[in-house]
Amino acid sequence: MPGYKVQDTREIKAITPAGSEQLVYRVWLVTDRGATGTVDVPQDKWNKKDLPSILKAKADDLDLAFAVTE
Image 1 (spheres, rainbow, N blue to C red):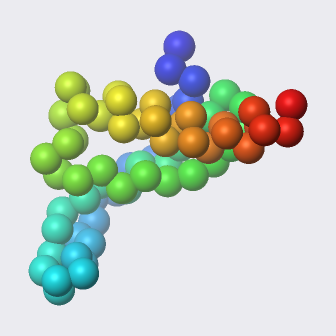
Image 2: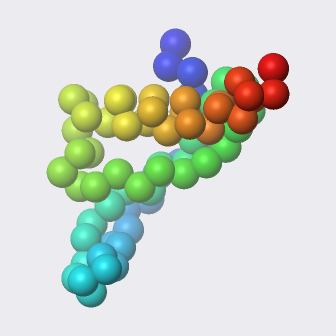
Image 3: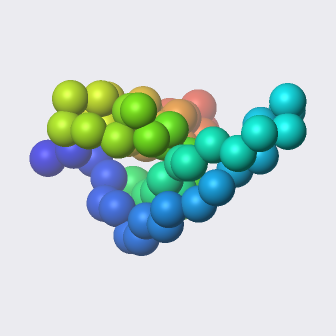
């Protein structure tokens, strides 16, 4: 069990600090502990190899508040 559930995804064009456009995928997550948040995944990381670790890391960050208060 990954510890999170993907609620929604959107393909968006983000503007970089240099002013160019970059395609990213915005992913909305809900963790098993009820924390919610989003993560922007660059197009080159949107694959079976990289995506699970990115989503797991974000879910762990979202659950950090629960770990601190326990």
